[in-house]
Length: 306
Image (cartoon, rainbow, N blue to C red; front, side, top):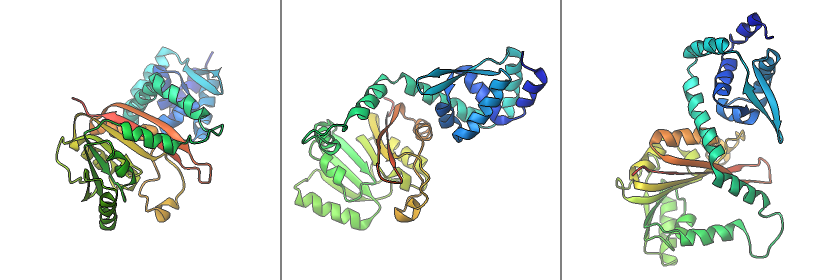
């Protein structure tokens, strides 16, 4: 039987209370707890070990992961819930848990994860992510597309081959001028470049079917503002697509690439999108570079409510 005094002593730590409250709602792995709490594996494992020793949680093996389940008595959990009122992070924990569970239910995510795991292991002439990406972009059926933070507009030029109109926005005058020249050279009269910032987009409200932020959001000083702007310019039912870096620790990126943010976690990005008003939010990791620092690419999609 667990010691009541030792159990109460464990509740003096805010992190342990947060873990118990999360496990009260759902059994979770260490990796999932890391993502929700934004803490390192070592710290979380230490706390789980202490909780398990006092029989407040139990673990079971599922593949490569240990899954932790609540076993604390009801009376002790009532004390934990009362103490949680003093812990400001519990509200964000609940939102993050919601995102984790949504990811679990996403069968399409599981399918594409397995596909991505096998794709590219064997060489097939003519098959590459670049060729598939270009082919898919050309069959996208969107009337008006906004490429926010477009740079010289490589993606915009691909989109312009199928969309009725593409608006490429960038805050660099030289980039905009280069993009305009390329649009003329490549005979793309439906591709329009505008000088502007992704946090203050020069596009009218509700006038776009698809908004794209491709490796642009981590350059924004206020990414939540950029997402709010994307929401504003989309028509009801319009789609948002984000390609960005998964959160990393390569500090030199700030100097080398003028990055403001060192990427985003899936939970963090999903929460910002939800706060901006988006629904049907999905995130997944679609690529990991082989060379150091092994940047990973995060894909997120969402929709503006009708």
